[in-house]
Image 1: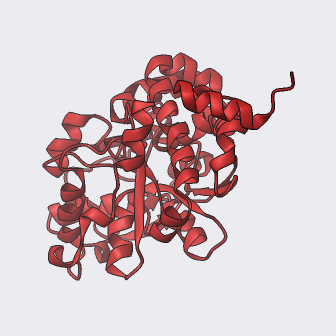
Image 2: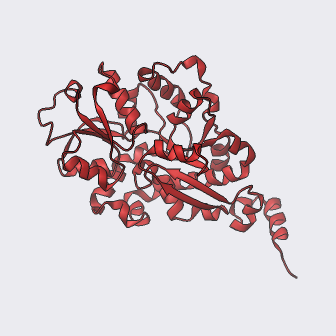
Length: 342
């Protein structure tokens, strides 16, 4: 007797084993099999779940053909999706709030980080006598890209100390070896970036850390509540038109979130491309350990996360009124809840 795909699909559905059926079976219901994800530096720990889902073939297991394009920062990745050259952004949750203010409706569907994991460090070379944020006035601040989450966090840091963005000069330095080189060569006086960039600069004593959001405690101390970070977000219209495709994406990402927690730094370092280690495997593993708590264990939004993000943004974006933002449209738990039940 010949068994075709339709027979397999019927058996899988009847026995409740569809979630573990072969990828070609699950792919039958996908509205789109090819998905283009734009990311502001896949090599960063901030985007580790995406890197793992990609490297370990979790997207393929869901029947998806995913293309990942890297950009200098989250704001650049967002531009690719807004411009129509990519489908999904792997970036900071707070962009969904900024976009809604502009009348563009994007929604986050799965979390990669439950803490920003962004760290601010000042140069031990050009600012050896740094004492307070006031010393940063007139200085050059390296961020992954202007308008990115690293830029936004620094704006918040300035606002907390009675300063504003015009008091400093922001320089886009990317999220990899270029950021390290910019600090070591004296092109910038301070940096707002993520691991492994920050851990490399710390290990070589090139920076003094003055703000850290890699742990939950530090995050709550800085922001006064849970602050969501990296996620997959995309136009609401795309979600409505392609719910099965979105579910497949979220399934892969939740699996990656859980895999990272089990594998730890050794497993992660063995799985990612060698170039992500920035030439120092030991420091890379240390950076994974430091940020492990900040990575989401299940893709879910932490309690009060959207409210914290909105409150933080209003501290340095005067035109952003809380009353004009519908947070329920910036995040949906439908897909991540289903993925965790599967």
